[in-house]
Image 1 (cartoon, rainbow, N blue to C red):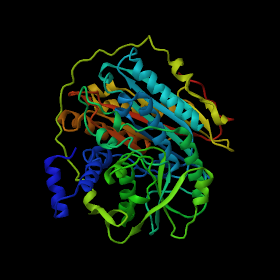
Image 2: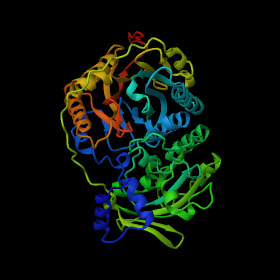
Image 3: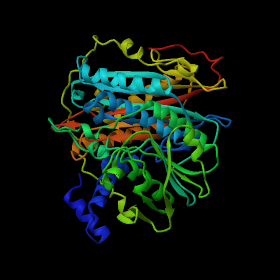
Image 4: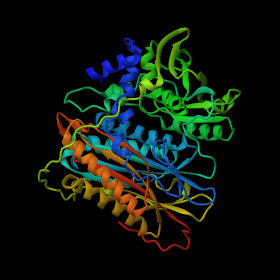
Length: 523
């Protein structure tokens, strides 16, 4: 929710009062989830470079060169708040969203991983819903879930963490969200409804007990996702794609503004052309809907690729164009409902106060009453047939199709270490990740991170966040183990009670020839 000083700044930038639709747009784009306003200064300190890094932070996913034309694309993201409100749909759509980040780059997802944090083993509403949501979505799309970790501690009782990671592969061109020329703006995929409206804003606020947040949770359809995956990869082959962006947080608003801002263009769209599945939707509802299984493409003006999406029974609609105005212009037929300078939508960078604190002593539970086999058995880890080591092993190993190469992958988290000493804790996590990959004779290539913290307005929380970022920067530089993608999840609090600092690291490494490699299953 926009604060009073932020509304005053918006008025100053526009030199006028914003209308209702414009206020909703600013509210979404200035949320922590979309803007990274409290975190981006510290994220800039990370080590993100390397000879094999093709694309680092700032894109939908990171891209690593593994030799020849082969490339690995990977990222981890959070879907924490939605997974507490509606565990099944929250977790399922988290998986769907992270897979779209991968195939938006032109890569085919080859493996899913997850890192889950729950309050206790008896919280079956959340545990059962989350695990089933992850399993059903991945299994239906046909992407193996090859690694899953479950952690238990009381601070996650009303703030479970669902961090989903996907690894993809391509030997073709990588596509980004940065247009290098003007083109038509095309909406593809499922129709837009009222599900998920306000999701980005909800993920940028702490919970209050008793609040009903169910309408902000997205509803997924894995079968639609599979169709969208295949149609999108087919579209990439046509040579007509200038830029691509999935519709995640803040939906149509964030996807349209991002491609325009990154390309230094303006953009004009007509909401009357957006395919809807509900009647009477207000302009701001269409803009902020987070209905799933949708993509945005910028295509060459002469592109006529509707037949591809007709074949896959998906909507394909030209809704606008890039312009030279540097404005974000939204119409409903002839009526302009939003017209603001794009650079005004760039949230101010915040340097929040940090304050070192002495952490309270905690008892670290030893969990013996939870059967991880029950979790792993729900995931189809062998679909596609390229899995060498699945969830029972750490790291997991997946073959590259038509190759002797294989990718080792893992997720690592240790919140208690970061609770006592955030900088040392993240060093331990990264070294553990690095060594796990080495243990199967894989060359560590890079990491993705999901940084889960409490309220950034709390100086103690921001101190921990700063220390984690600085510790990650120095450790990754020492190891030449770059951060190529990631996500920040703040406001993991309910009624003022927050989680421990919980960075989750996802690491990948290359096995040059799995047939000759001496690797052993480790648990």
